[in-house]
Length: 162
Image (cartoon, rainbow, N blue to C red; front, top):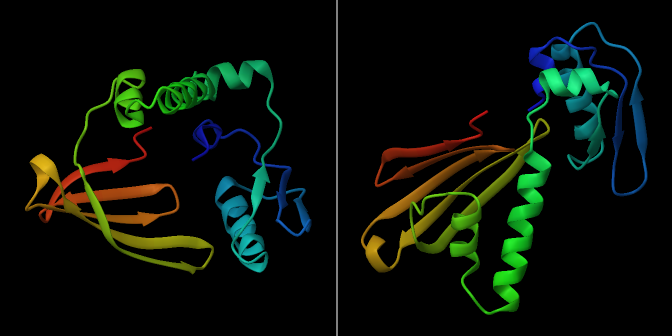
């Protein structure tokens, strides 16, 4: 999810790094599509575990194409969870309050299936309802950061919502 790709900003250089310390640098590609293809192949060779650092951006580029306040939001959510845990309060309630969120389902994970193919983490999660959601089932399908959830076979929610 690279918002600068929408602005067609330069996709290179891109550095990939794996947990063993192996590094790869992509110095030039013709397009973002090619950057995705090349970096995905490198990631597969790394065992499908890699961190990336994409091309540096000017302040103007970040202002024009960045998704603003995401780091601040993540820090705020983390602080609220930490504070709730320290006080033995409900961390989910803290997240909902801080993020102005909505509780969609409460349940227990009963099945997880994951596999890595072609550089993607793909899987499914099944959750049986608890409390007010007892008798319902939430199914989640995932591929990396993309997630879709169905409640009792009806679509409920998906992410990311850029």
